[in-house]
Amino acid sequence: MPETFKESFKVAGNQLVDAVKKLLHEGSVRRVIIKQDSRTVAEFPLTVGVIGTVLAPVLAAIGALAAVLTECTIEVEREVPRTEGRDHVA
Image 1 (cartoon, rainbow, N blue to C red):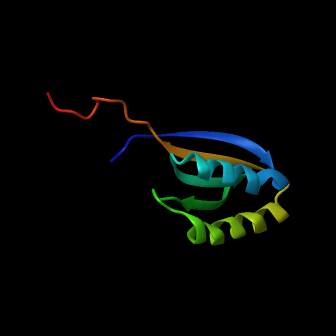
Image 2: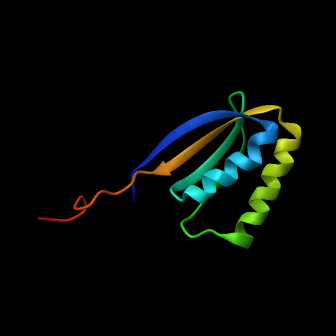
């Protein structure tokens, strides 16, 4: 299983959809968690190769959340990039 790390940042509700779209295009994202204060509001696991029509319902749900949230935290779980030769056995 690949190694992962987490990062988080705050966004205004009206910036939520754009922020998640940007994260999805980066490609190394495994999971997106949307929190308000310390409470998890939504969690979306993402698998490698998720594209187009599969993302439409996720983005629609995030859009609905953005309508009611004034400020939230996006927590992102990312895959650690592999380096050349790291997985080779000598």
